[in-house]
Structure formats: structure tokens, C-alpha cells
Image 1 (cartoon, rainbow, N blue to C red):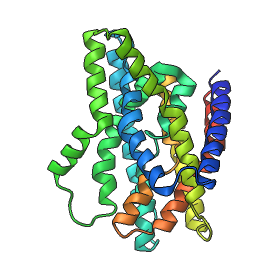
Image 2 (cartoon, rainbow, N blue to C red; image 1 turned 45 degrees about the vertical axis):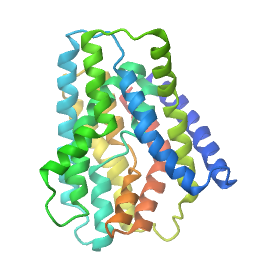
Image 3 (cartoon, rainbow, N blue to C red; image 1 turned 90 degrees about the vertical axis):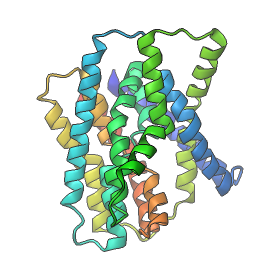
Image 4 (cartoon, rainbow, N blue to C red; image 1 turned 120 degrees about the vertical axis):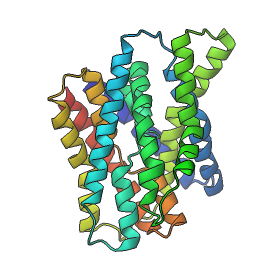
Length: 304
């Protein structure tokens, strides 16, 4: 069933990505507007989508799964940091930055939420939102340190994490879910409507980004190694380890799928800001995003 849902999800993603690609190619949406739409997705539709995922009936038995998700996420982050630390040592500095960042951080929020929701529904989206909490902390601390030699101040990290709209949506959603608050119909419909915009908007934005990218000349042995690590090696290790853990199938599936997500868009943005190879970072996003449309269904099939 999960494989069937994933195949349908990927076909839908292909169409949405293709529509976004054509929209950008025909210049219906310009470069500036596309960047503004990315912010709109990250700061509006994705937080609403995250908040909406918590609008389920709370049962205290869910607390154990909540803790399991956090532990799985912490384990994944430790693995990705270890792989990043031992890799790319002979790569030139400006490419080493995005490669290490793109190994530690996956596109679990921007792309992962729609995929998980398509495969596992609202319950899966709920657990995926919890899974992203440690990942966002790592993203704004260890991840950003890949680009900066100076130490990151703890206060700056806490401020970025605690005030990020997606994180705010998590603890607001938890508060509403545990308290059992029922919203008026008009408010509930509004939240649900904005949440529903997230998947088509995010997928079309991926298509627009792919249209703007110029991956010529970026395919080399290092890129091949990175693609293998990001889409195959890390999720394979997670797949093998979680097979021995006494956890529900849905938690195992979410962990494997998010660990196999492509490089995040922030890889190119941070490379541009902190003297990384922006062109190479863009190629990382392009190649892993396209190939993930094939590797994710394979992982779904293996998950059964």
C-alpha cells in the first residue's frame, strides 16, 4: 500500500514539477517572484501545514511514539554528521562547504512533508513534523558551521530555532492538540485550506528552481559520491538499523524516507552568502532532486 501511494505521489510530483518548470520557462513567474514564493512557502504554507498535522485526537499512548520519533531523528542526525565529518577531506574548500552541509541536512521539511503526507496521511505528517525538530536545530548550528570557521553563538542558534515559523507551529500545534481545543468551522476551514496549498506550491517551486539551474560541468566523481551518500548510503544504513528496532512500521518508513531526501535549497543560498561554490551547490540540488523522484519509490517498495 505504501508503495502504491508513493508511486501515485511521485507521478503527481512529476506533473507539479513539470508545471512549475513550464511556468518559469515561459516567464509567467519571474526570478524575483519565485524567490518571494519560496519565502511564502517556508513562512506561511509550510507552518500552516505543520500546524494542521497536529489537529488530530490526542491519546496519551502517542507520547511513547513522540519520544521514539525524537530518538530516531537524533540517531539520524548523528549518523549524517559522522558521514559528513569523514567525507570530502580532499575536496577543495569552496565545494567542501556545501557538500558537508548537504550531507548533514536533507530537504526533509520542504519536500519531505508533502511526500510523507502523500504516503502516510495526516498521522505520518504529524510524526514527520516532530522528526524535523532536532533536524532544524542541527541545521542552524552544526549545518551553518560548515560555512563558518568561527564558533556559532548558542544565543543566535536558540533564537533562530525557537522563532522559526515551523518550530512555532509545532509547539502551538502540540498545545492545541493536548488541550483538545476545537476551532470554529470558519477558522478550521481556513487552516485546512492554507495547509492544502503547501504540496502543490512546494512542488511547482521545485520545478521553477530546476528551470533556473544550470548543471553543466558539475558532474564529477565527487558529485557521484555525494549523490550516492545522500540518496542511497545514509537511507540504507537507516533502513538496516531500524529493521532491528522494535518500532512501528510508520515510524521506520518516515525515518528512511526523510533520510533519503535530496539536498535542501538552503545549500545554494548559504553557499552564495558564505563563499561556497554556488554553482556546484545548485548542481547538488538539481541532481539529487531529479534522482530522488526515482529512488524514493524504491525505498518505499523495500519498506513494503
